[in-house]
Image (cartoon, rainbow, N blue to C red):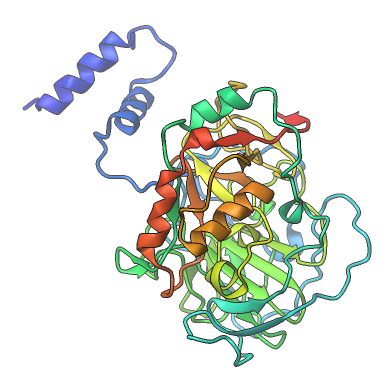
Length: 414
């Protein structure tokens, strides 16, 4: 029996000129279901990875980077039977040097790591989930994440770009205490240099940094162990100054992990991913440096770096420091990955709660990068039970019209 929903779908497709058009019926149905909601409830995060058969992860020793632009991201792929790493002790840690521009010799990391963020104080010096990074700067001072852009010129196409994201749409804190039974936000864990290394494998091995990675068995997964979302896992090696990030990460019974993609970043370097490469993020950027964290906004009393956010529709392009796009739309009025927006200097932040003022100050001084496809104006942060969700919700009073696009450099479309 034909349902009323099917009739509505058919009429919409016919009125849209399906007959004789260039799209297949299946693709037309998918497009309509995505835009109309007929496909059921969806997470605010849009799928990012290609609709193709899962790649068979190659052994680390045989991986050869391919300098190409990868397929357009669509639906994430999780293999039904993830490959199981061979038995035996994990191999020695790899020497990974991210590709990118030459950086000056790295300086020692400053500051210390101490205590879990869930504690009332952070002074134990013990690494762990959400560990407090006491004044430690992520990446060198001249890194784009740490750049003061409060006086930078506005992009000539700022008005159209901001309008495409939503002038009347307010900011949404995509982080806080608990949501849907799991810590709300993108979690991370800090480990020591002695953390055991475990094998990792990837669906997109040709654009991932090979393992092993120093991932503890209890590493927090975004959305919780049973999450069907992005399942990011972020690990910071505090002694060696390295950041390990994975997308769609799943622990294996053998002690290793399988993920959609993975990236390693040297926290003392300005090196970028190879051109056209993804990371654990759609933009090919690191995730951790763009998170709003309680220990900064409240304990430290300042956020001294840019943040990251998502938009619903991006351009098939990216700008520095991003290295990857995740769209097929070529409109110049849509934001490319890596576009930076800034809260206008005239915006009055005085009425907001103290921790929210710290976030807004950072958005005036450092701005935030378009880093992923998702709901418009969703700002990323790390979960912490000490956040006030009510206070964070006041960010919704800050509208898209209160932002401007910082002038962009060359736009990469290939």
